[in-house]
Length: 498
Picture 1 (cartoon, rainbow, N blue to C red):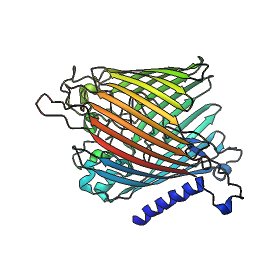
Picture 2 (picture 1 turned 120 degrees about the vertical axis):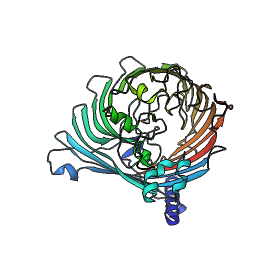
Picture 3 (picture 1 turned 90 degrees about the vertical axis):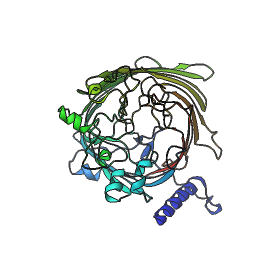
Picture 4 (picture 1 turned 60 degrees about the vertical axis):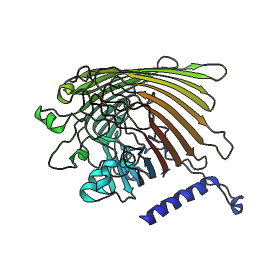
């Protein structure tokens, strides 16, 4: 393990030197221009800059395809404060993705991902990992003593004609409530079918039918809204949807007893027909359990001095189609303080205003959840993301109000600091003091540094820090106090695309 870690540090160092320095002996030699086949966007999704072309012969499907690679490391350091154990984890891995050429509209994509935790990780400590657990599979550690995980995360068939594409199999997905959320080692992925239509001018339409999901720290695909409560194994919960936002009352046994197969049906559309305006509408449904309708609008004001002001508004209405009677109104099975303990009907309102000027921007965000049921969102597309959710954490419990301030700045170009992006957020979460099933109020501060390289667009470095402090102690109805949610954490990520 020590040799692997040494190699990783050496690899990073070599790439930094290649990107930033040229020795005196090389000053007369032209720099080798690196052509990028892919690029990581600011939300950590990969955009393919070069794709396989169409071919006229079936035998050229494989020979004319393109192989994409990614080498990745993640280091996590977690200071648990007074409510847990400090820990750290180091993941090294990446992925290989092959996209075939397209023949008569058909092609396929396969993507193998791996993360090897430099541990070792002890079985007894698995319950303490709140941060960095996505570098390994807790189930694999507990049952096999294996610190690494490798999984065929993408494997789908595609048919594309004109501006319509249908995918069937395993794929990454980006919607209001379902996302790949590729901020750790292996992304969140889904199985099913996905149809994207862009034939209408300035309009995008998406349909999806999802049968299974694979969380970032899992090797297996499992139910999308079912918590594994198999009593035959103490580690069974780590083979179902055990996401932090998963409703623990919607168990496999309860759904099986009612003959419910958890599936997700999605319809979303986006339109830019009105100048400087983007409108999004999304409908997500898990039949016989829960559904939601999301409306979002953004408008951009442009001023002569270069200032841009972008107000945005998001409204989400959640409909209880049976999940509340099965699991209750609280995600953690504690319905004390809820107006209707057997209902998940609820709504969420979020707003923000962005002020953008030159290399800097400032955002003011606010969100408020109705005092009814908690919002169901265990698919890694947090309903408050982009408005009031900082790095990590949940703020969509019933009767939660949040205020956030965010500042971004790109450091000056043509200096040794160029291609560095700074981002900082300060968030105040006001949770319901009457509900012991939710956390105490918190103040959160985050600071991120993202470094790209002009001469090496394939390399990305990212340093993130978060400081969470309990605002004040809250007593439960039985006189006990809520657990102190305070912690500090640091993460360092390196991505190299090839």
